[in-house]
Length: 261
Ligand code: CO8
Figure 1: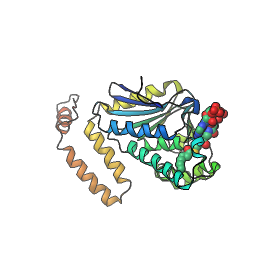
Figure 2: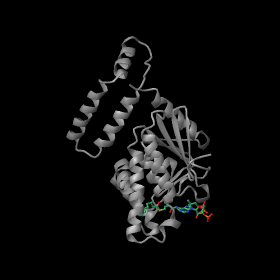
Figure 3: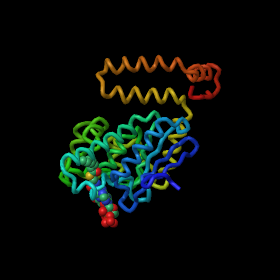
Figure 4: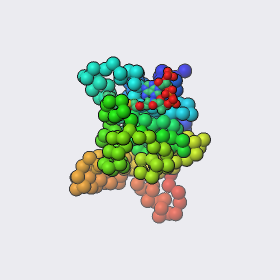
C-alpha cells in the first residue's frame, strides 16, 4: 500500500516515477498533495538509488489541472499568499533535486500543473496534452512560479501572451514555442520518458548532476558569474573517478563503465 494518499511512487530500476493521483479532481493540487510532494522530494534528494525522476498524472485525461480551486476559493489574502508559498517551496525542491526530473505530461497541464511541468528539467508531452496558465480567468495571477519560470523558458512575449489571455494550447503549439522538449503518441509517453531517463542514466551521474546545478544557478546570474561558477563545477568533475573512466574509455575505444564516484 502506498504511504501517500495523493501520490503513487515506484522505483523502476533507478527511475523514480511519481504519479499525482487524484484523478477524480483531474489531479488538481490540494494542500495535502503539495505536502506529500514536498516530503517525497526531500526523501528523493538523499536517495542514491533513484537516478532520474519522472513526474506524471494518474488517468488518461490530466497531468495536473491546476491548484485545487475548491480549496483556494475561500482563502483570505494572507492564506492565499501562504498557499502560494507552499507551492513555490515544493516546486523549488523539485527543480533543485540532484537528479534530472522529466515531466511526462499526459493530458491537461493547467495553472499549477503547467507550473509543475516548468519546475521539471525536461518536458515530454503526449499528443493530447494541453497547456494553459488560466489564472487570470479566475481572478488571480499565476502563483506557483509561472510568472518567473515561463518567461525564462519561452521568452517574455510568449509568456505574457499565454498568461494574459489564459488561452489553452495543444502539444504541437507547446513544442513550437519551446514549452516542451518533444511530443510523442499518447500511448508511448511513459516509455519515451523512461527511454530518455535511461539515456541520461548511461552518462556519468555526477557530471549530469553538476551540469544541472550549473544551469540552474547560471540562469539567475550574469554571464561572467555564470561562467565562473561553471569553471568551479568543471574543475570538480576532475575529482571524480568517472572523469578518468570516461576519458580512458574514449582513448581505449571502449564503452565507459560509470560508477557515479
Ligand atoms: N481544482 C479542483 N477541482 C478540479 C480542478 C481544479 N483545478 N480541475 C478540475 N477539477 C474537478 C472538477 O471540478 C470536476 O469535479 P466534479 O466531477 O466533482 O464536478 C472534475 O475535476 C472533472 O472536471 P470537469 O468535469 O470540469 O472535466 P472537463 O473535461 O469538463 O473539463 C477542464 C476539464 C477543462 C480541465 C476543467 O476541469 C477545468 O477548466 N479545470 C480548471 C482548470 C484551471 O482553471 N486550473 C487552474 C487553477 S488556478 C491555479 O492552478 C493557480 C496556481 C497557483 C496558485 C497560487 C495560490 C495562491
